[in-house]
Length: 291
Image (cartoon, rainbow, N blue to C red; front, side, top):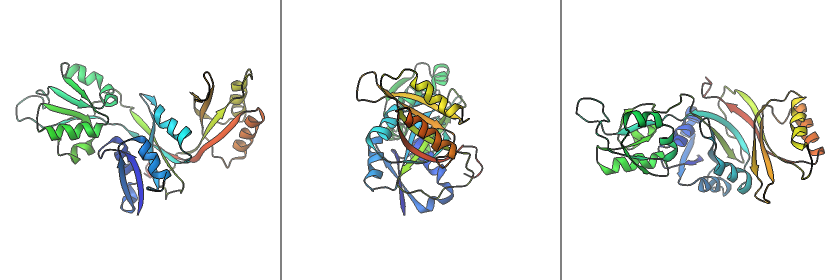
């Protein structure tokens, strides 16, 4: 049985997204939670697991810098595919038998800061005086709320976490924005059996510009533009080698086996730039019927 690492503990959005992607064949896989993103990467790098699921970007909060740094600086695991999944946060606790709102008696919230930050409007209007204790994941917050046995203590997390720890959904989908999607990538050395319904193909590049080359970035962008290659993302990140030096993380909507793509990369390298391909892979949207 193949093993898939994800950022745990059990009940996180990462687990929901992992099970969603592999849902048509999940009897062939073992899903293994790890406490830290470094452990997720290292499990696959060492062969302890076959693949790792990495959240790398959120529609509200942007790129997950720590995860990108591990992908680029610490590991040499190619991106094999990507998909998007909605980060739906819920208020989780124990339903009260009292009349009125099921969360009226909540005095403390045990929450992951990113999750509570995505639910500011709900908390401000419905629980303005609630005390918030910080934990390092949504699932850990739900676990602690369940372990407390106190109906006045609640958490914010996934439907899966509520089911795992025997708690109730006191209020569903309390996020401020309906488009709160997270982009996940699968990394590893062996291509898995993929579901149908591919939305498009994508290639991720790391481009490091030569020093003292005025207009280098403009020329790199022009290389893709005149070939009508769509760039869906470009982000500068420090090289960690010298203050003021950066590389560019670039996503382009084209596979590496395209003649246009190989020619574009050759032209960028001819400018004196260093180019590293992190992966060329199929990409899936959450709405894709095949998943």
